[in-house]
Length: 155
Image (cartoon, rainbow, N blue to C red; front, side, top):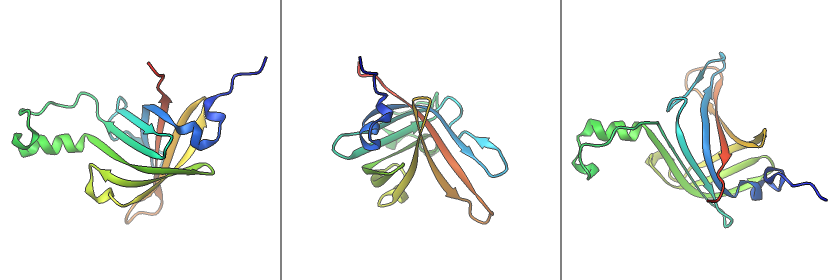
């Protein structure tokens, strides 16, 4: 009998296809500090399709509801808090070697639209880690965003 193949041992592009649940998003600094932008209980959903599309959404836990059903009618401070506690973008992707490149076509932050986001791919105990290096303006060194994901099973 043959052994079952771990889906993450397949070709990298095939291994990414599907839905992923965020386990942790940590930002690692040169001095050893680690911060969690949306806290240790952040929520996230990452999707990769067979035909080359991707979508990532991350949120702080227990986000406050807006006081109005229509967000445009809510107070400015409420809308700002909602923006600050959520991060999302989508577009197309391609895997090459141990990295995935995202071409951003839509994003919560309009400044991301049209950018190219490169993420290093690493498999840790059957889970997917995507990481990105971010230079720190005015500081020597950079910080590393590390996002650990668990594959979601089809219901």
